[in-house]
Image 1 (cartoon, rainbow, N blue to C red):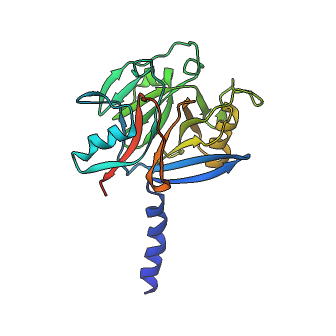
Image 2 (cartoon, rainbow, N blue to C red):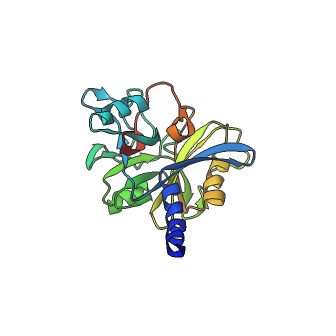
Image 3 (cartoon, rainbow, N blue to C red):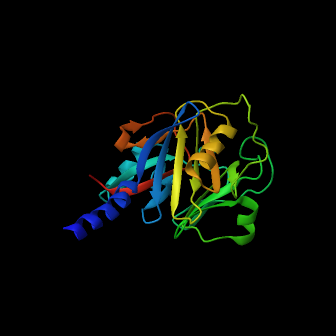
Amino acid sequence: MRLWCALLVLLLPQVAAASACRDAVFEDVSMTVCEVGADEDLRLFHSGPEGLLGSFGAVNDLLAASGQSLGFAMNAGMYHADRAPVGLYVEQGQERAPLVTREGPGNFGLLPNGVFCIGDGFAIVESRRFGQQRPTCRDATQSGPMLLIAGKLHPRLIPDSDSEYIRNGVGVSADGQTAFFVISNGRVNFHRFARFFRDVLGVPNALYFDGKISRLYAPDLGRNDLGFSMGPIVGTVVPKG
């Protein structure tokens, strides 16, 4: 009996951590965090047989044919007016948009920016370094700016900036085995959003996905944010319940 109880205690945290989404408060702003382990089926989605997916519902419809559905999902990178990815986009090993390493306007061009890579584990790699090393990624999406670089805040983030929006992004644990997807439920500037990844989640690297249009699908929280069509979407795939 004691051995069984000990095994149960060891197993419970692992089960609870799988694709778990939770709410947190940081400096009076509500955040939602979805934690994904490297043993889960995390994928990127953009287009299906009939073209752009653009919504969580369309991804679920696509997965339903194989008896699957989304466990959680959020928008995963910036896109042009036609919803094409702004930077590198790789889906199931196929590069669909090229890497962009030049400085440019807007948040994406606020270097350093980075690439979120899904392979045997997870990684966030600064874009120019990614171009030199070309790590193997089953799925990858480029966005910017980086929020954290080796534990340090992006040097151009302003503590008292009045540019505040609902924002979302991703951070990766030091061992590459856990990805933390975060969306603010209130308006935050870049500096505060980055500090949440550093001070609360304790990750060394974090990447901004987008703002204003940031949306989350988290059925365990009863949440399915609606809005205009999106570009890249990231989410876990689970058996359809």
